[in-house]
Length: 469
Image (tube, rainbow, N blue to C red):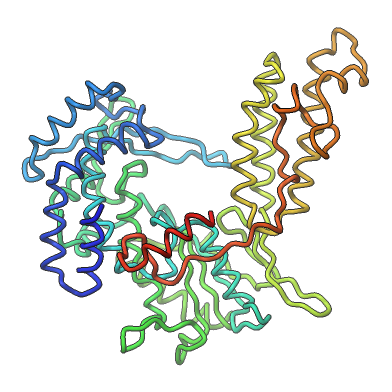
């Protein structure tokens, strides 16, 4: 929306009176309300998931009624409903994560407020914050860690890494500390924070945290955690950004990379992390009601590496080269293969075509996420394991018939282009193999500094970046 770019520009210029005026104008505009309804009821993944009222809006007639209701409701008199709590399993873990699902109506209001708040905060956020921000993705954070550990020339001042974990971040954020950072829409945001949850018909008050599942929750979490990088001298007295190697004193060589509530800090020595970094981080987190998890927070050397956002990142030192290897983590490889195995076990009677249609979106999505990493060997290994699982699936289907290996090969496998033994029911309908991707074609270009899609001066930059992707 054009008005969002005006909000961004006014924030960068320090004209906060104009920012507030434009935000109020946007939140009451028909365009913002209709756009919010479209995103919530037609685009978002949870569009058919109801809140405590049990309502979803599937037809145009139902959406028109919702639009009329919201257009006639002023934010001053708006009252929200409690969220419905559900628990979903964490990937690769036995424990479950609580999700708070607002009603569709409340989600629309949250989207309206997000449209107004996001441009202002995109102009304020630190450059090495990457999670849940427009135009930024996981690979940007991973690339920045790679730069901090080993730069292009093979030199670095950051040998040690604080692999940090915030204990129950979304459930523990202090409401008042968060609201002090947000000068507008304070009363309505307080409503969402204090709305309470309903689980198994029982109502519970919420005294802290932002409900995971709310549209505005990731933005609120980013606002609460904003300022972490500035603790270590990232902004000079002139207002310009200082890279870690240009900072002074104890701040020299310290880099902060954050993706939502996951963050790592690189530093020259272990002692600097223990005596300087961790105390400052604990004080900062304590100011917003958060704590570091003692069990999950650890200090590692770059040789040992760390797992971050599904990647294993570590230094590699050869005879003539020093580099940073970024590969899919063993945990995520195992989770991916177990997911495929579970799908095959649950669909023993499905046809080959149905199996291909079920697997291909999973395989393409996984390969697309890791295509910018050093994934060639991993992709080959995953393809081999896929072949073994599919062979076992084929054998089980015809176990009673006593069909031999040659018959199974002729029925289920064929040559497709240059690959033999492709699982396919027709040349044009084959299983996707990650190993067929030409990884040399993919070289990730990290997002530039503080660039934002809301910056009207960077329209050409974002147009070119979208074409690259």
